[in-house]
Length: 282
Image (tube, rainbow, N blue to C red; front, side):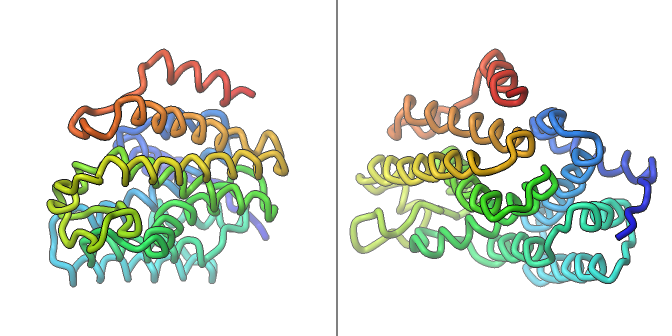
């Protein structure tokens, strides 16, 4: 399939979205070759846009309509059509790296869950499905853009996506509670499980619940690392970097403990640089 040359204005528009997000993602993707890096920027821009639809103020019906519009735009990619800078760059990525429709759809499904449901103490199965949609599906898109379409690469996405999202859950317990959400699983609370985020924070077993989620995340980090050994080394470079960075965040959260959730955890700048050199260039 022919891959059209990029339009400079489209590239600038997509990079602007990525830069405006204010995360380390923009710099982290510098380890990729130019074409693959541009594909990852387009994937990130798509994720950022649909996430903002859910997080910004608005009526549920309006948010659903906006997400459905993105379902339509993604479907058009698979008949060779694009309507704006982001979808034109996504179309190039779909053609170049065989990105799958169902993975884009899963991301939107995950965002719709957040837009329509204030999730509180989901079951482990519900939490796992949520992690698959909002994180592992992004991973499945990403590993293809990185350069590996193998079954092992999808296994990396499966485990690393869950590890990253569970780390986010632990890092953001208080922030999520402020939005009426608690992603800590009901299975780890004493019966009956909490019905509100406020009630979850008041539970005496909360530190133990967080510790068990940390154990779950650590297991996924380990399984992702094992699967990476079966993948192309160069293709997995960004995945190794993301995994190492988030694993360090998880360790920092554990060192802080689960009694002081209001104390933020951030990696020192020198630590980020060391991780980038150790895993980004390996």
